[in-house]
Image (cartoon, rainbow, N blue to C red; front, side, top):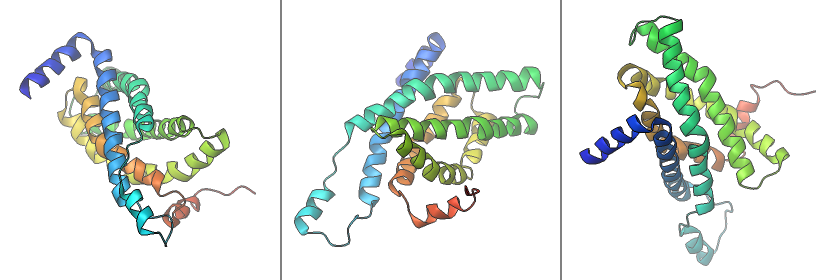
Length: 215
């Protein structure tokens, strides 16, 4: 394990962007496999009455490798490159332009606020939009899915990610911050899959009441 970590460190110092891109793709792909496994065993049956034969068939886990590939591409094409330049750029702006002392309260708080206001919502919006189109949905269907899933995910994650990012920005060197986030995304991908699985659950409808209705 130590040799693997040293190899990763060497790759990161030699090819930082390429290493972040590849590792993000791998982690997000693996995360989707975990997400499919978790949601399969926690999903409620769509019908109240079901034959034993169909129940046995439903209980068999079949990984959707197309979805795994699409999720890995999201990590590869968006999270990896965008996340790399985001964390590097954010660190540079806070240090150079705002001239805040590293690891001070204002330094960490400014990073957490910027990440939660800018990168977090953008990441969710791109994720739901991309996964919708990647699954073959129309623009109208993707729009409805985003309206249904974005706000609940944003609010629920808003209570978790700031805590995760406080530790990240306070203790983790900037070159490893994306890796740290991606490892937590193993759990986050399970959560997002669960959000998507809930479809039009009653608790989601409550979030719609927060938004102004169109007349």
